[in-house]
Image 1 (cartoon, rainbow, N blue to C red):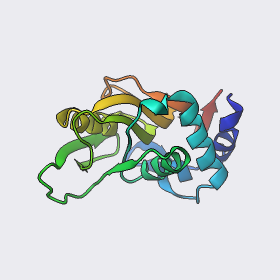
Image 2 (image 1 turned 30 degrees about the horizontal axis):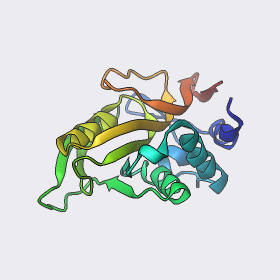
Image 3 (image 1 turned 45 degrees about the vertical axis):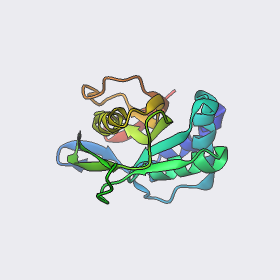
Length: 186
């Protein structure tokens, strides 16, 4: 394992798993803000993304609300690349793009503002499960004719069905739930 990510991996090994209408959902600061996310974990995430993406080729970091925000913020502070948050509420701006997202455990609307045609963007999110959030945000970015440089998630669930995702996604760590416990794959 990349030693940069050891604080993240160490923290994940203690994550509880809960049943959410038949879906085994792990609870962690990276994905839920519970328990609090330690600064060392956020630094590890920002450093891990910086090592994997050419940030010189990025004009804006795009992160979906809610759990992509703190990863995008940590990366923005570390790199001085502006952050755009894809919101769960509409502001009815003329250039706003609305998209419907469906995930393994729910569905909702997302709203993109602040990304223009030709902007080179990096999409950052917490976890890849079904891929529904990523696909929805990518659809919005295509609508505004932004250039998607890369997609990075902190965690990829290898035990989830990624049928909804048609794009390449880079993950910092791969995880799975087995026997009611979260495992970090080395």
